Image (cartoon, rainbow, N blue to C red; front, side):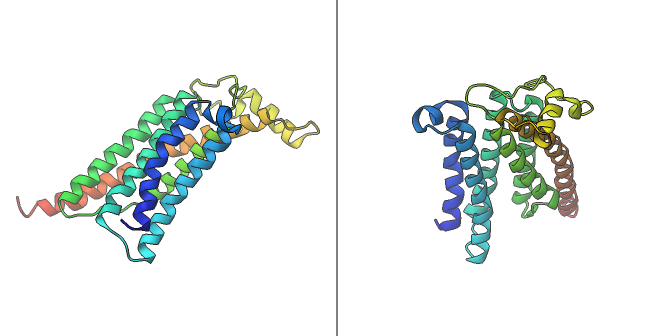
Length: 231
């Protein structure tokens, strides 16, 4: 057990705390802090451990099998828990979360099968981009949580068609307050954050499909090619 692995484990232990903060009023009742503020702080802190554990492991030459095993598990637990909590808060559509979480399990299983064949399928650039997009998306949607009410968006909690995305009337009002003479309220910021988060969710879904295709192609290229001589 070294420092990088300790950071990875801390990310796993943070997950239940994040869920409690996002799904209960414990933050407001016990600490007097809005749940969106405490929730995004916990999530960002957990996401930073993902950056530092790998960097420290390489700089200290402490890369271990335990770390390679725990790191992707911790990442998927954190993102899955956050997204499912956002579904419960009606901030993310269930269909998108099912696609994202299902992709995570599929890729993890695929890489595990490859590992049994002695082949390591490294994270692709698209996979890394997808992870960054997920962190940004979840952060934006957490910030749009209100202690007592949801953002006043006409299609809040409903399917968000891409075609009519920028025609949401509340978005136009929020933009006019942001650049116009009227003062910008917190609800305006909520609408902007919520809209940006839902836009980024499309980016995550699309990048999930693209990166998954890359992993499957790498799997069939490397693993199947390795097995051909034996057959």
